[in-house]
Image (tube, rainbow, N blue to C red; front, side):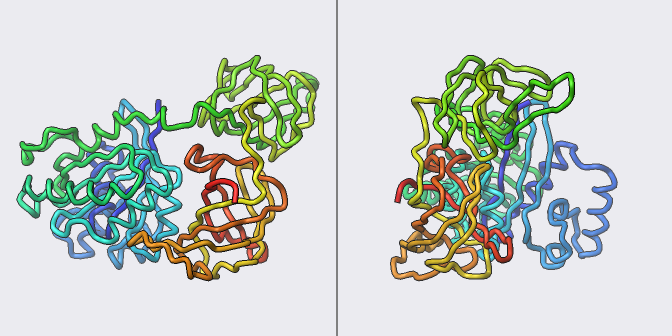
Length: 416
């Protein structure tokens, strides 16, 4: 069954956690004891209704303040599809959490309060979703019950968002009027919005075509582990395990191992369920090669006539995730696919104001939750594609070697 990853985004109190709680409740994904615990917690808080937001807001601080702080992952399935939902925070001080949740998402559901309309935070989250190349964006205009299910108000918000979206690269944009509290247009179509002729949120999510979003042209296989069983039965077995990051691999295909440049062919592809005739993203497989070439963790298997250009001077956008500011000239460890390197920050080209999209070329550092464009110099060449072409081979993280903290998430733009 196909898996869809979705991340919620939007301003504080737009109802992200309530919407996810409604999806879980109406698809009968939660257990009775979970529901009882939420009902008790709702009464303790003085709520006059069962507060479904408490299904995802699990931290004590979240329940006390009524806000989402950390990313909460929830799982549910329908007969058509399996879902992983990342409930991400709305506050600007938790931008790094939102970036973490949206980095692997196929769909971003941006909630807008029908009473308040498009806010600065709504624009910020839309920008971050497009920066992270989330292929599909759904704008859920929530709390329609509080504006008497007004078609005029829904149209006004949709028009304003479309106008803002012209500044961003959004390939698939949909608008749905919902009430997370009442359940209107969440699971099924609502009688309260007879003027709306589109799909419910769940129906839309079930039918979004995500297979074509993955890069099936550029064959990329970062080697994670060399499998060499020493048992008598498998003494001559040698395979290379990892997750396909792009393209399609088949037995008989001619491939090149990078960075060595040695060429060979694919002898076979194995999975936990046995051999397969082809492998494509995001399958985890073991590739066997026809020749006994030297391959180790961090190497990349690609096509001889379609290789990533090795990058040592890297132009990249980063989201700074540490309370210790960026140091121009500072040295960091860099993790890219299964490959490790060290890097020095040569230049901060500009910092982006995520609310106005203004580029500040006078910035000298990045602090927690800020986004900027850097020029890096790495100790070994990265076998990377531009992030716009492949999210798997175009992303990396920076690590502070002294503390081992992840200090930044980065997206490769190209050669600096």
